[in-house]
Image 1 (tube, rainbow, N blue to C red):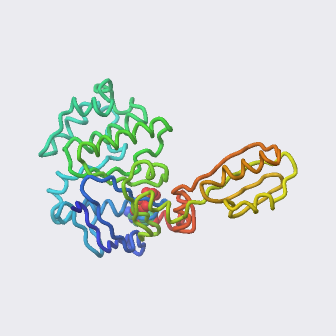
Image 2: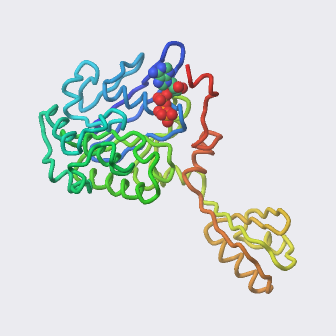
Image 3: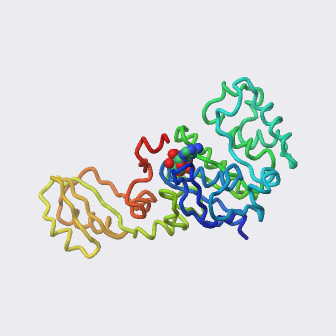
Length: 312
Ligand SMILES: Nc1ncnc2c1ncn2[C@@H]1O[C@H](COP(=O)(O)OP(=O)(O)OP(=O)(O)O)[C@@H](O)[C@H]1O
């Protein structure tokens, strides 16, 4: 059963079209990703879902409600992550949770939440003394303090180190395990691949694909790329003659061979057979980055708009 239904959402800021035409549904209990480069319209889309912005066209239903007209009800049932700067420096972790809890009809057990989010030891720590990862966990805790049915997490791991990012991913899994539907806004491919059941890829205000991570990968095919440096003379034909090889590229003694999953074994076999020494062996598998590039014609981390347009 869908808990969020967005149909032909359109939103402008003055003359600027932030969201052109976006449609998707989110099913109960899933982690749904909204993925796209900076300026694609992700935040505007989820702000319309939360009822924080009024759409200029299309319809949005959340738990069967109109998020603008039924804002009060939606606020109780949809938890959203706060931006860091929205908390005063001196506010302590426990105080922040107590305060935000008082806004909600359904109230989470704060001690259990602190333990679950690994913040029990920081309960009396002032906000400005928390590390980046702890601040991030607190913002997630604040999104959960009203025991929401849906949690919207926007750019959750931006600014975290790799360990902090992995910890946060485990946290998102555990939120879903509590039965909460998660909408995750991100421009990190790896994050989307690791966490999301399905995702909408948004580019320049439009949905370019909605699929599972595996489904998106399948769209770019399953070509693997084997890179190595040939330390002995090697004729390209030795490689192109292999049935597993679809292409061979050379740059000096650097060789890149593409083919299906079996291409690595085939290449290693022929190098061993001909006693050709090699170094720097590396294999690239297709990633969501490749899927993104093939869907949109550019990398996910690229900014889509020139600076002057983004500042308007
Ligand atoms: N309040 C606003 N007034 C004018 N333009 C805005 C406003 N908020 C966003 N925009 C513009 O609308 C477009 C979509 O912005 P939005 O923040 O929704 O994208 P995003 O995909 O979330 O980007 P990011 O990953 O950078 O947060 C961008 O071009 C942005 O500059």
